[in-house]
Image 1 (cartoon, rainbow, N blue to C red):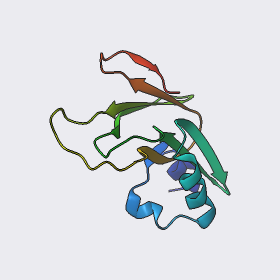
Image 2 (image 1 turned 135 degrees about the horizontal axis):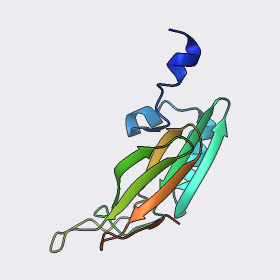
Image 3 (image 1 turned 45 degrees about the vertical axis):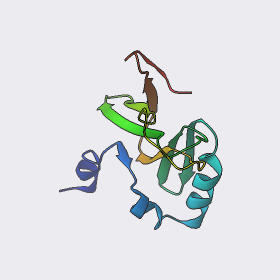
Image 4 (image 1 turned 180 degrees about the vertical axis):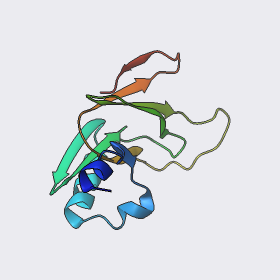
Length: 125
């Protein structure tokens, strides 16, 4: 199979696990450490790779999470839907500041959307 044909089957959006993040180049891990503290969507390009971070910024305990709901790949862009998960009522959590984020390797334009608790969908910002 030619490299051109093989490349067309590569995903346009791939989550990078915490285990994989430990193997990333130092410049990427420094960028992650800096940008995870700020709510929003950030992109970092290094050589042939583009990294996309979706971050909630700081939260007061580990009950807050960011969850990938779905990815829709279109011809021109990829739509990524995320949801902020909140602490479970009545559950005790350690009072420690956390920075929920998702890190992905991307190809092409990506539109990030937030699914609110009422299930409405808005651009993530």
